[in-house]
Each structure stands twice: as structure tokens, then as C-alpha cells.
Image (cartoon, rainbow, N blue to C red; front, side):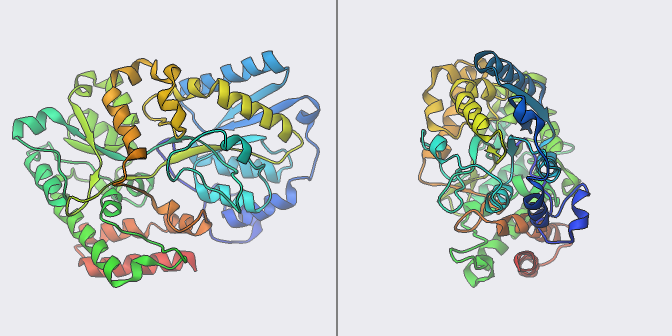
Length: 446
């Protein structure tokens, strides 16, 4: 994901509301189903493919347009690339489908959107293309046995830390919650703080705060779509997580309930905090804005309470092919692009776009990027997330036994984040905050 997981709502409403900015997605999918064949596509006659890109950085847009130009040169088929921010891509795609002029290919950042579109019959299976490669864990989201999603990156969240400040204080990389909290306290003095962790009801909070609870074995849904959190053992574990976050809060800068992605990057790169969770983007920012800190920065995964497991919070992005009169040409382009231009695209965010395809890690073309060569230790660490048996990879929106809309609804409820806020800001007892979270999550998936 491009640092954001904002989504449209997943709760049914009347169809008249679909042209509002944040559509109710269940109904929007139904409206799209009715409108897909409403009018002809002029671009089909022109041998033109329309690609909706949701990676808006200058380098990523340029890479997509260079690929489009090269494909037109070798195939004669024109590829038009439109770009929107990631939190707007699903609405834009739905609007195009409803208008009868759908994009042929689109990025998506949320598994629930893939499920909605696949179940509505809007997507072309990519199973054959996907099966060409070996993939890392928890990145393929099959719907009824078919793959409709081609993942192009992981965006895991792990913990960064200042190695120089750790050395000055005689600290070791923590393997338990208590060690982490003690380190954060030792690194807090005056206007300098031990750690930045967003706790707001937003994408930053829900991506960067839950890693500790995943490490300790929290599961929100069981294998039969029951609410695991509403069981005595899980309540106890989740309450312990809330108490840990409360213990950690004095070592955080003020205003964490309002913190966003830029807050985390700014506070760490500016030297205000000694630890911060993020994906590879943070190291890219350090190389650009604070290169003196890049060599002083280490990384580790979220620890659990007893030193047994570690975790990362899941993040991901991918492409889908939409059912249109140009779907055959779109499939040809995707097959060509993923074999010939994929690595060039990954290089536009070389540490942030972590490859989900395992073959890429051994590809000398990918490894030739200067930042990948320089930060080989970080790259090996990233790869180890996919190969170690003790690493837990979870996120609210990927909970449950299979890809489904229900975890997406839980994500949008922000029940976990409201429980954290209740414990830290309102000083609500952990067991009461846990019950609040349970009620919120239950209501979201009814």
C-alpha cells in the first residue's frame, strides 16, 4: 500500500448515494454490475488499454508511462495511464464501471475490494499468470479457487530504532514488551521521546499500532468466522496488550491520537523519537532527508510479551484486470509488463515496494539498484519475514479463514483503535476497553 489504507464504507445504503466521495462499497458493486455494459467503449475500437494507477509518486508514474510507451512500440497497442491517490482508486474504478467506460486494469489496496469485484463478476481470473511464480505468505487472495489479484508489493510495518542512542544507553534490541517499554522510557527525556506510535482511528494507527498484539497471538476471527476476541483467553491477551500500550504511552510524543504517516516519518527523521514503526519507505526518506541517520538506524520486528514470537503488520498492493471488451489485450499487457517492466516499477520505491514474488530476491536486475545494494542487511531482514517460522503476519483487513468483506468492515469500524484510545486517553480499565472493542467489531460484521 502506498502508506495508506483508507477505504470506502462496506455497509449497504441506498443506491442514490454512490456518487458521494466515500461510496458504500457493497451497493456500489451492485450498481457497477448493472452498468458495466451500458454503453460501448470507444477505446476498444482504438486498441487502447486504460490503466488506473494508484502509485502517485513522480518516479512510479514515470515508470508506468515509460512502460506504456515501450509496449505501444512493440505491440502497437496504446496504454493510457491515469493516476489517483491510493485512497481514491476504488471509487474511481467503480465510477468508471458504473459509467459504462471501465478501466481495463487497476491497482487496488484492499482485499475486500478484490472480493467485491470478483464476486460481482467484474474481474478476469489471473490464475495462470499468478501460478508462474512462487509467492510469499499471505499475499494471494483467491476467490472460489481463482486468483483475481496480481500482488506487486508487500508493505509490512516493523520497528526502526537508533542504534547510536541504544549504544549510548547500553540497550539491547528488545525481545519482550517489558524490554521494549523500558528501552522507550530510557530514551525519553525533555523533548526527545522513545517511540512514535499512532493511535488514532485512521490508516496510520491501524497499520502501525497492532503489531504487538499480533505478536502475542491475538486473533479477531476464528476459522468459522466467529469473533475469537470474544473468548476468555483472547480477552485476557488483548487486555494485556492494552495495558502494555498504556505503559508505553509516557514515552510517546503528545498528540499520537492525531498522528498520521507523515508524523511518524517526520518525528523519526527529525530526531525527535528513537524508535518508530514503518515499512521500507522510512529508510528511503532517511537517505533523502537525513542521510546521517540512515547508517545509525537498525530494525527489528514487533516482539511479544514473553520473547517467543515476533510479528509484522500486514500491508499489500496489487493489480486486477477488469472484464471489458479489451480484457484480452489487457491480459497480454499484464503478462508482458510483469515479465519485462515489473522490476523497473519496483525500483521506483526500491525498499518500500517489497517484492512478494520470491524469484525477485535472487534477480540481479532487482539487486542492482543502489539503495538495495547499500541496504543489503535491511533487504535480508525483509526477506526473512517471508521465510522464518516464528514471524506472525496479520492485519485487521486480512483476518479470518479466507478473503472476505467482513474483515474489511471490521477495519472500517476502528474498534481496535478505539479500545486503545479508551485505555490510553480515557484511562478506561483494559477489560472494559476490550468489551468495547468486542461490541464494535460484532456490530460491524452483523
